[in-house]
Amino acid sequence: MVKIKGFQAGGVNAGIKQSGKKDLALIFSERECVAGGVFTQNKFVAAPIIVSREHLAIEPDSIRAIIINSGNANACTGEQGVMNAVKMSELVAEKFGFRSTQVLVASTGIIGEQLPMRKVVAGIEQVSTKISPDGWVDAAEAIMTTDTHPKWAFRSVRIPDGDISMLGIAKGAGMIHPQLATMLAFIVTDGAISGEALQSALKSAVEHSFNCLSVDGDTSTNDSVFVLANAVAGNRPIRLGTEEYNQFCSALMELCKELAEQIAGDGEGATKLVKIVVKGARSSQDANAIARKIGTSLLVKTALFGNDPNWGRLVCAIGNAEALFDPRGVSVKLGDTYVFSRGVPAEFNADELSARLQQSREITITVELTDGTAKAHFWTCDISYDYVKINAHYHT
Image 1 (cartoon, rainbow, N blue to C red):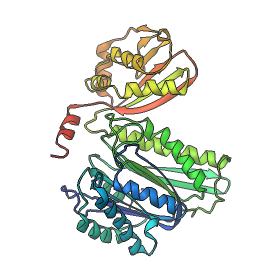
Image 2 (cartoon, rainbow, N blue to C red):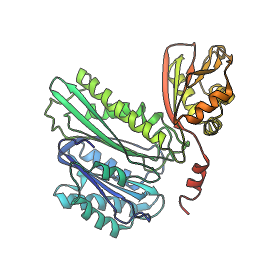
Image 3 (cartoon, helix red, strand yellow):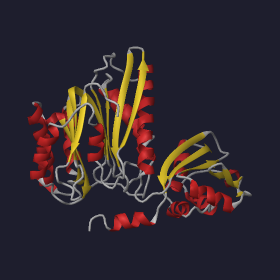
């Protein structure tokens, strides 16, 4: 994996997970960072989010580290849970000699159980000695829950002052839906950028990536996306409204889209990554509504698992969307094959298309409208028998 100047990361097994897999990650910056964050909209906000929001408000331009555990969400754990999240930040700060408010905290896993703090304390001691510029794979593995593989992405931006690099890691496989999901994402960049510009860029990137993503229609209590910028690249700070800002936004958005696609492709029990594209809508709101309706339809998702080119389910989902469009102008493609054209069934060989679907790990559903020029995209996956098995036995 690539390195980002001035950042180190690592991941260890602290014994939080019964599986014995890595479950504690640390991201560390050698310099103070401008930071931004977005969080779940679930009203049952987990303790680490309460703490991280407060720390971002206090130290928006001087964050130094992120400590993350998996296997325990520290959600719905009351005042003790908040105290434990604060303790995690204090332990990291004491280890490296900075303020606890310069540490962000994130957790993911089982809801409603107190963190095993003895294990967390020992794990922080351990991971603090394991971080390195090459430790990103270990960190990406340590934040996984039902993920089957670590997720990461890299981008580079060339601006007049030189090159800026950014690296992101993420986790998520189930309980994934717009307005974030059971996902965590951590992005670092060596670029110099104002706090206002960084937060604006992050919100825009999330809106077009993680908020265009659904596995099963549920969102969680812990969802967080953080971005840290340490200015090691030495460029003049990027400001809102500049060409450099636009370039930075484009790179950050593409990085987040890549992570979102990886999450969709690793959906719990999924056999197919599904991308939905809507074109020719009256407005972006209409296009998004149609894309999301298809992406969250259980009937569509189960048909895809069965390799069934059942365009009737697609058309029904489109018709149920809260969007204005002329049904007579609607066309739908599965891959390169039109299954519905200008409001009526298209001629195609269902057996041949089913065979192609069976051989495909990735499928694109394209909806073409004749109402305007707006478009939207959305990522999802199929729903399989294994999704039920995984979630039926996740806690018990």
